[in-house]
Image (tube, rainbow, N blue to C red):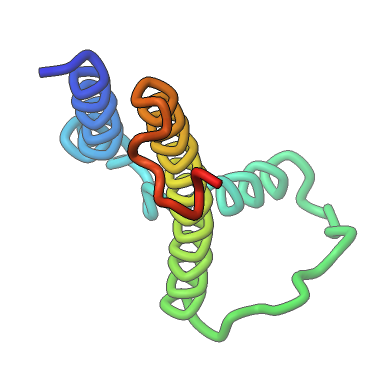
Length: 122
C-alpha cells in the first residue's frame, strides 16, 4: 500500500470519527435540539445576554419549512462539491497530459525521430 493511500485512509477514518463520535458519546443529549447549528446557538446566546436585541439585517429569503431549508443547504453543498471535483479533475488531467507529452518528446529524442511520421520528419 502506498504512502498516499495510507494517508487517505487515516483521513477518512478521522472524518468518520468526527461524524460518529458526537452521536455515540451522547453529546448534546441535554439540549432540546442538540445539533441545530451555529446560527441557532448564536441566536439563543444573544437573546439570553441581551433580551431586547434587534437584528440589523433580515434574511433575503426565508424558506417556508426546515425541510426546504435543509434541501437548499444540501443542494449548495452538492454544487460546491461538484465544482471542486471538476476543478481537481481538470487540473489532474492537464498534469497527466503534460506528463505524457514530455514522455513522448523524450522517447522521440531517444529514437532520433524514427517514430515520426513522414510529414513530421520534413
